[in-house]
Image (cartoon, rainbow, N blue to C red; front, side, top):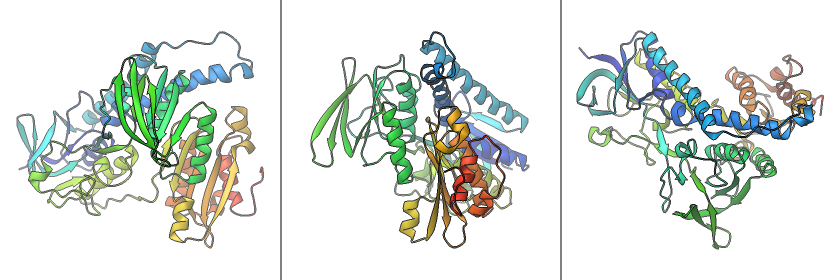
Length: 462
């Protein structure tokens, strides 16, 4: 008899959700995690701590920029960085302890240590070998760096180091204009740092709807960000009091340098599968290092599955969670399903940026006839009342059937607003279905309805 029905390796969002759901389905489950706390990168050094710092610094921005406009007078607060770091850690601790409680509640065994798979059906943790009918690889990802850029997590940092700097730097160079770079750049910009973003491509936020990306860059520039686009970073070197970044402009191959107290390397992430023993097992990998899986998250080795950042697809915690639940269903003999066409993406800056479904560029490339419904937050009473009237909602619908194909939002609460469209798309709704649904006034969500109305006879308030 096997020790467990399922052993999950990794307790990040994909792994812990998979373990808990499999236990709910009646399986005997263990989860391997080498960190001192559960939750993986997301809860410990990613999504959650970064949102704490984004919240704290947004409040600081509001005090300095908007309080007096509302008649809230008085001395402006100063920043106690150590206290802000302690607040961030309290948020992390509360969440990681919550998962520990959920493991106990659902009778999931935590195997503490780093795991490897010596052979199918066996997982080694430390000196102990445990047997399992099924194994799920949910080991997540790690920060990817660049040649000539040596990370020390003090001066040249990844997101991990950027979350725990010893002091607030006066200047930051961010390499990479993706989600992580812009979120952490926002934190330090609001704290008073001079932030320069160096991006290899000619636009920020690769893959985003081009119109939204252009508007987003304009807004961030107004906030004080500096952007150097079309620039290939050659190296980053530590020096006295900071680091020097050398880059070449693609348009003329000219070489330039930038100096800053801190350099944040935000050039994406790569699957973390080191030490699992996958090569020895014969587990097939994709060209870019992801674990190769079939439509049921199974590898080519019987009884071994993989999910989350370790496999192909967007490296998002909620995508990993969906896959974790789905593969638990499959292993329990049920039907697991993930709708990869309806996975939202969010950037938690101010304004927030959120999207789901296809972009205009993708629809054009696919030759799909579509229509666009747009509505500016300038026409939304609630957004104007809180000084967040920049941005817009953009809804894309099939020209013939009116079925919603995608939505892109830049504005207040975009990360929450997008889910109305996620649900609509999951049910195959039309733009008219959204337009005919009563939305409470005054809410930001009215802007979504107005964009849906704009796909038909026209928005009311624009």
